[in-house]
Image (cartoon, rainbow over the protein chains, first blue to last red):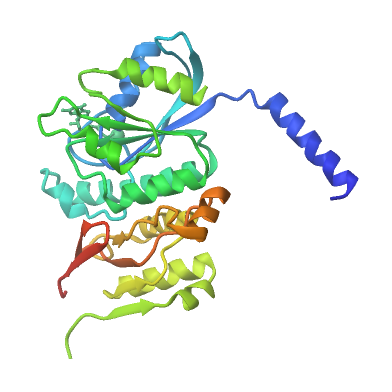
Length: 213
Length: 122
Ligand SMILES: Nc1nc2c(ncn2[C@@H]2O[C@H](COP(=O)(O)OP(=O)(O)O)[C@@H](O)[C@H]2O)c(=O)[nH]1
Ligand SMILES: [Mg+2]
């Protein structure tokens, strides 16, 4: 390597360290209905008092990535981290508007929701490639974690070398099995919570402060 | 003759294609109602773009997306190759991958080394 290139590399690394005081952008990813928006709302409410976005039992309620800036999270051990939270649309490989009609939506409305949902998923993938510094990957612990889309998404996140915390959500439900999620992703920290009831979220906050700090 | 076409694409053929050519090949095939079997799976970056392009091509009463199943990557594996891959931190890519139109195929991974695909004709 020539002296010039070496110097240039050193300089750019130096500049990066100096100017990188940008807050980490943490994306909440996962399949539709895992509880991503419920968690985003809880985080935002717990640490800023505001709200993030609407929650629904109909899949693809969140069809635009939403960002909430400048949240300081402090763990029980006193560690803290400044982040932006990005709530993303659920990632999937298929969307059929007829599925929304089963929830009682009219055809026009269902088609519109489907189109927005497809745009939202594409946008979420784009965020992941360009703008995200860390990931909370959210799963419904009553469901099979070995779905292809989960394996694929965690593979994509790993290939980008982003730190990831896996959240096993909905542990308040009787058939929740966070253990199954732990065995599916032994290479990452897994935190079982109920984002609806708030159980064990303190452990998640502590993990976030340690892992994303 | 009525039926369903299955295209098996060899590792050699896949490695001669660019990422975008692979994605195009898969989606054009699947949109015609065919099942595609890749001898070697997609790289994570390619999978990410495949999801993105799939989403952009979904249309009401037309293409509704894909269903996809693959064997998980061998965890490093045994012997020298496994050791090398562990040292280099390089995870081996995913293996045989089956992709089909979402409205015609249901896939089930029975366990880590058996995939069942149920296909309906249109
Ligand atoms: N029982 C239970 N339900 C939850 C929990 N978190 C979210 N939900 C419900 O799951 C559905 C989807 O939640 P939402 O946050 O919109 O999911 P998203 O699509 O991942 O953003 C809603 O009906 C929520 O009330 C939880 O911890 N326990
Ligand atoms: Mg949501």
